[in-house]
Structure formats: C-alpha cells, structure tokens
Amino acid sequence: MSERIARTLALGSNEGMLAREIAAALRMTESPEYAAVKVRSALRCSAAFVEISRGRWQRGCRATSEPLPLPDDEYQEWMRRAFGYLLRQVAARAGLKNEMTRPPLPTQRGDRL
Image 1 (cartoon, rainbow, N blue to C red):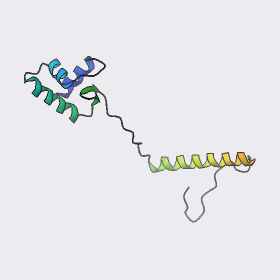
Image 2 (image 1 turned 180 degrees about the vertical axis):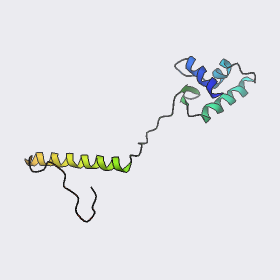
Image 3 (image 1 turned 60 degrees about the vertical axis):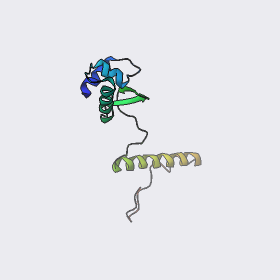
Image 4 (image 1 turned 180 degrees about the horizontal axis):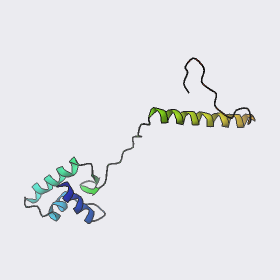
C-alpha cells in the first residue's frame, strides 16, 4: 500500500495531496471516507511521508531541530581545537604571538582537555 501511495505522490502535484485525493487516484473500491481513513493511517505509520499542511501529504522525512549527538572522540577533538583557537586569539590580543602556539598539555593527575 505504501509503495502505491509513494508512486501516486511522486506523480501528483508539488503542493501535496489529501488522503481522499490519494484514495481516488488509487481507485480504491471502498467508500471514499473509509478509503481516506486507510490511506491516512498508512501515511502516518510510515516515516517516508510528511504532512506539509493540515491534511496535505508529500514524500519525504520529518525534519527535526534536535542536534545529533557527537561521539565522545569527535567531541573531545572539537573541544581541543576550540580551546587552541581561543588561546591563539587571546595570545594575539595580548601581543604574545610566538609564546602560545599550542594548547597546554594535560597535567599528570589525569586531567582531561
């Protein structure tokens, strides 16, 4: 069912389609209301379709504003580079361009960057 819906949406208008329009395009034999309910439930169950406005559907995935979590090693690398950049900026403002070219090494007590 979802493959037929995807094909119908791909060939449909760019503004999206209503569930009853999709059911009519699929030539479902049930009553129009029941066919629209079946199409709507198939649309909501699949992550391949997105509701762009009230009742209008398109192919695509849902957008999210949550940032993806970085793995620990990438996060530590990013923090190391940011810290080094900050030290270079502070040293440049203080006129110490040659003294601070790298971030300091961690201490022997096991401190992290």
